[in-house]
Image (cartoon, rainbow, N blue to C red; front, side, top):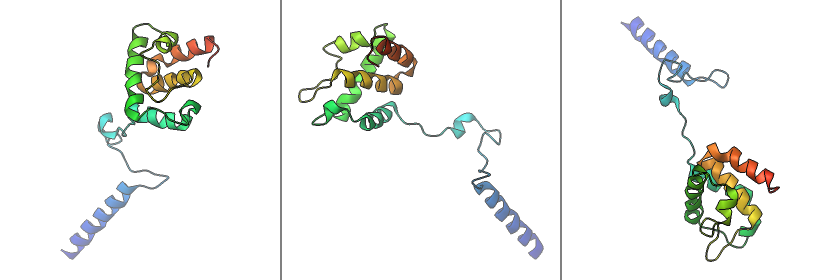
Length: 142
C-alpha cells in the first residue's frame, strides 16, 4: 500500500511538472492534444481598444489642446467602413461634413484626419486598408 501511494504521488507530481512547461518547452495546449483551435485562441483586442491605443501613440498635433472623447472618436470608424464598403473613398469621407472628425470644441488637421482614417480602417475594417493607403499615396498625402 505504501509503495502504491508513493508511486501515485510521484506520478501526480511528474504530471504537474510536465504540464507547467518551461521557457524552452512550453506546456501542451489543447490543440496539441487534439483539441479545437477555439480552445487555444488568445483573447484579442477589440477594434475600439486597438484604435484608441494607436491614436494615443500617434499623438495627433491637432488634438494637443483638446481632442475627442473615446465615444466621439469610436463613432466614426463604423461609418467610414460602411462608406468604403459602399465604394466611396477617403476623399469622399473626409470631404463629407458629417464624416470629418470634428467636434464642438475640437478639430482635426487634414493630415491627422487622413492618418486617423488609416488607423481606423486597420482596426475596424482591414479589408479596405490597401484601398485607403493607395488612395492617400496617389494623392500625395500618405
